[in-house]
Image 1 (cartoon, rainbow, N blue to C red):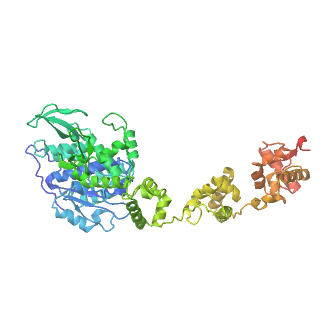
Image 2: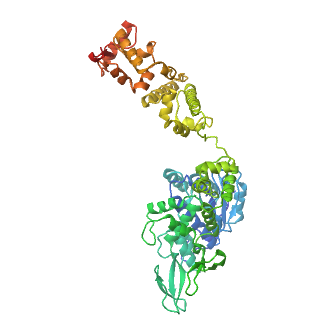
Image 3: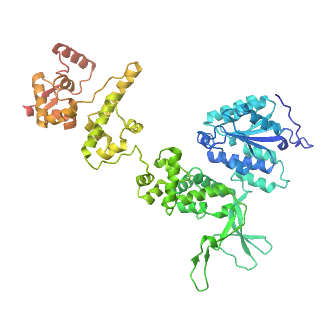
Length: 607
């Protein structure tokens, strides 16, 4: 169905506004601004994106423009819709979808748009190339005039964003920005809501100097006229003057909102927030660096929700100052809030459960709730949960993370405690597991051990043997870098040729390790040299000898074993094509592997 555009009511007698959008005919569509999708946005900073979406929602509330929101699979990996939209635009209508990627494919969504009776659609969403483009092109084909707010939308890459802009223009969709949208609807400063509009400019452009949003102490006279701004430590001097709180620069409020969002939504620690503020160059009031204490003071300051608290302390005449209980505190509203009460309460809840004085029973209940929801527990999972104390707090309350698990009756299958009896038997079993995995897979790696819950973890092998290399060496599986590389190249070649991987067996040197002393091994090398005139690793493998791996295990390398046996290489660098041809001829004539010219000869010291 194709609609006819409504006549514009905002056109002036001079013709001004004929090419601009009409607020009286506009409806704002905010599509799929979801927490999970925000993590994929790369063409704009997520903090800027959220701030721009918040500005659009506030603008809709201020100018009484209808807002329709929708989300794609909010209960799945895409995550829930950002709560600030409905907080800033309480009149917004949410339309659930039934799995459609394109919102215009949903009949309820299209019906809700048609019910507004407006023909100018202002769209923003994540991703721009999908969640905005698809409904925008369909709405344009249906006869609507469509605007796409690019900086209130996000894409996984710059290339995707530029491609979307090109397709918008080709399809008749008009790209715009939050600042341009605000100005296009603002049109004139001669209107009653000019002060609120000025605050919105502070969201669209944080450096906009006309906006005053942060908190400052201002000295006023008996008529309420400002006298001066008070610096920290300054007080009033006259009885007919008083000190009031005022709202200051928008840059500071933007930082405060980011701090609350990082702490309550992204579950960042106080130290991590302070580090990020220092790295981004955000100044402090005193010019020093950010600390966790500074961040904590901001997160617990009720003035941010417009409430001033006094009577925290009292001091009788000639007495000491004492702290009053919280029920004796007096709270009064002195300002309009700069953050929502819901966001402040979420931060306060996380602050309370993260403190050390949290009761053990309450901490255990929160972790038990997480275990019931997820079915398992890890340190990272606990740290990223909004209602559980951090693993550091649990360690302080219970002594260790494992003790907290024990209090819940939870046994992590990946954690295996060091056995208190017969540790050698347990270690032999662990080495046998390594040999079994090596024979089955052809190689062993840390990733394989950590990926299979039925195997001891790499951490456990390090706990028992010091490092993985020692465990591999004791189990008799390859642990040298060159051996790892050789096995990997063999597997790659077999895979490319379409052949099954070569079956491998655990080297037999651990089974014969106790049968040979160092002297017997060196005598064996000398006998091989006497019989064949040379000694190589290939010759050792071809004869009934201890495997070369046993010599490497005992002496560190075959070269060191040759040196201690009194043998030395006669031509160690003969790697030319002629040398290889000569070696092949000698092997053919002698019927044995190796080459006299490339082998070893006895030194005088060995005779």
